[in-house]
Each structure stands twice: as structure tokens, then as C-alpha cells.
Image 1: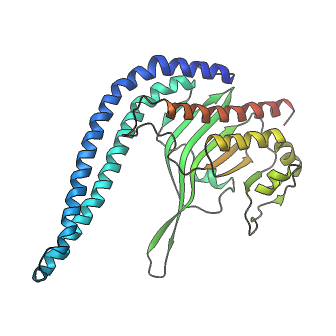
Image 2: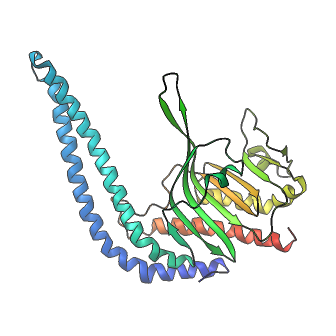
Image 3: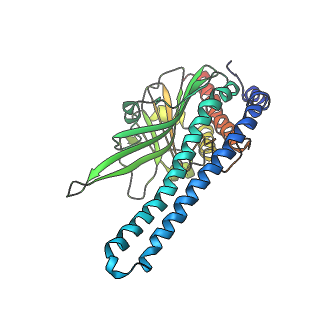
Length: 315
């Protein structure tokens, strides 16, 4: 099933969530409670043991100096292990829940599908010129489907690069962490237009800077393109409003986009873990996570509706 308007999508989402997803979540929540108890039990055993072993440094006689070094070290390792175990068990539970729930939940999203397999290639991202340099890309949640015959791909991504110091020690740096959204359009763009956050030291130009009518948008974003006329046609007041709206929906602290090769790629930097459904401390029946996901996807659909209007004007 494919939806042609946002209201139909909302109504179907409510129906599928209430009739098919929610009943299953009630059973899964019992497993969450048991897993959470087990996780907390292991966590506190390791934490208490770690504290007790670490405190032996104050009580072991000086003649047992080796023991006074070994036991506290084991204690610190136990404390760290407690947090590691909790993190691993939480992630394992989330993965298990998503593997079961996401295919069911996707019925509410029409013909969209979910996978943990990477949707974008590194070259596709690099060709947009949104990011100056990165070496590796890891993805978590990935969605693909169509809305109004428009292909959409969504990926929670982490782009990184590595440096070495004078001693050869490696350090991994984050270039981007957030969500990548690719929206296809019916007609190809004649040029390449890039919208990036404006920086104090001045943005590196790929092409000639585009001067826009909206001073507030111009102040916040640096736009350059190899087709000035097309760039001004694309970056209308309506587009800018939807661009700001989609950024707000995803709680993005830095938003960028590029028009190239028949699609628009949006890169929204976020600090939170997106599409999180398996928090051990929160009942899986809590609808908040699903409402947020609904809001995020609707903001993408609104962008598609705007691009459909551009098609009719002869883009």
C-alpha cells in the first residue's frame, strides 16, 4: 500500500498501531521487565564488588603492596564491566525488539521497509560535497519506500575519519552523526546546489555563492551552486520553511542538504539515538517513541509534497 496524502497515512498508522502493534507490545513488555531485573542484578553485583575491592587499598598492610595494587585494579575493572554489561544487554534487547516489531510496524508506513543493512554508499555521500572528508560510514536503522511515487531512503548514520599522532597512535573523529534522508524527484537537476551551515571563518566554496532573498536564511546557511538560476528556483520561501520544519522534527542542531543527480539529500545532525524502541527502563507500550517516529516521517512527506509542486512548475 502506498499513501497519496498525509491524512491517509496518519489514519492507517493509528489503525495498525492500535490493532496489531500494541497487543504484541503488551506481551513483549513482560520480557523487558525480566531482562531489566536480570540486567540490574548483574550491574549492582559488579558495582558493589568493584567498590569493595577498590576500597581494599585503605586496609591492606604495606607489606602486601602488590595485593594493594591488584585488588583495586580488579575493582575498577568490575565497575567498568558493570556499565559495559548494562549497555550490551540494553542494546541486545533493543535489537531483538526491533527485529520483531519493526516489520509489523512497517505495515503502518505503507510500502516502507526497515533493515539494519546500509542503504547509502560512501561515494554517494561524498559526491554531494556536504562533508569535506570522511573515511568510514556506519549505519544503524535504515528505511526505504515511496510516498506519492517518490522514492525515499532514510539512514541513521555515523561518518568518521582517523588521524595519527607523531607516535602512530590512532584517533577516530566524528564528521557527522545523525540521519541522512534521500528524496528522489521526477526530473533531474541541471546543476549541483549545496546548503551548509555558515561558519565564522568562512565556508570553503565548491561553486559560486548564491545570494538569497531571505536574509535570515542567508545569515544562517551558506549556499553555493553551479547553476544560480536553478538554485534560486529551488530555494524558495516554502522550501526554507519545510527545511526548518524537518530540522525541528528531528531535533537537529545542524542541518544541511544538497540537490544533485535527481535527488535531494538532507543531512540532519542529532545528539540522540534515533528510532529507539527498546529502552529497558521504559515500558515498550509507551507510545511516545512511535509518535516521534510518526512526526519525523510526516515532516519528510511534507517536503515531498513541496517537491511535487515544483515538478508541476516545470523544474
